[in-house]
Length: 535
Image (tube, rainbow, N blue to C red):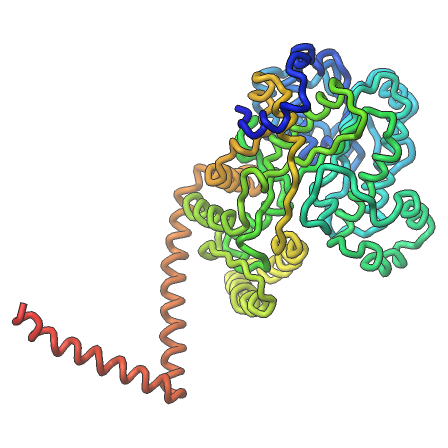
């Protein structure tokens, strides 16, 4: 259901009488060929599944896949289609596989590494292109980040310019491409350096030299990912002036909300790693503001909006290239503190099999307090746990795990300490121009999300799809957690007693306070019989 605010917002710019002439989203994709880069990624899988299931009359979907880690592209395709997110589609229409056409290639190679025959097929047949291939590692070396996130975009655009029937191109960026600004409007900002200047510099500079210069080059950007994404947006603006193009900016893409299943996730990136580490009791403290907004968007909503955005781009010709922020913070906000509270609550309700300590996480903005807590609440316990593992003949793992976890959370400090306001007028506009049937099938309205329900499903998704744990083992995990709770209570009580005994033995003020307290306790109990007689 579209809100009153949405209707008021778009009424001046939409001719309602003209809306009847627009095709629905499934009708737009009917008998069309689509090309997707990044189909083996988290968003790519969800996009491919949604297109095939909700646009059943689509003619073909070409997907670009590269060989990886000794696996042939056909093997990677099979692994992709065997993912849990395709289970519903497999049951409803097993014939969908015949619509998928594999293109062997890689965006880091000229001509996308495709054969001449594959390239000509795409030129002759493709009408809609989704470009989502990128490196999403925050700490990626600048040379590779530019190669994939800027030069890769340029190579895709060169292919677009040859296509005979192109109706819509959607470039997937990120809402944090311009994170140096606290308010992010839906337009393309000037880049820190012109794209072609950066490409020229990276082309002749050695990797080690670039690595040294990286901090100075990225300036007020927190990492190479956001830096290259902002430059890629400007490249798209310059190179796609005569191509029907939209730039799509999702915030932090996480597990599915409901479509096709609740809580599906297939990686430890971003908040998923935090939630898994919190749930297993390994992560105890993070730098961050618990009142800051954690702008996460379910992947099914992001992909539904991608499909709708490409539909809008192809059916509503616009003089200006539109930017679509796909975010939740300004519409239906969730803070980092909320996420921590819900994750702890549902990790206690449905614990992980590998839980090692009672789940608990603290956000703090104080660096000193953070470091002290890391030392006493993470580092020292990791040594103790490894000593236990060694004494029982098992391989020690907790020290290395804690070290990797600390480095991973440090990368997120920039995002957990700040708030952004992402304008989302185009999201509301898009909802308003869609038919009621399309709004139901391709739901991306953040107002429909119930965060407690979402986080509960998310935690179960991490358990089932990422950690590969069976729900049938929940009773055993709950028993383990109860045992850990009793052990934690006993340990904390023992520590308090020991510390207090040391204090009263060595600190005169503590001893005086203890004697004073005992005096009044004894006096109180001596008065009880007299009070009882009076009453």
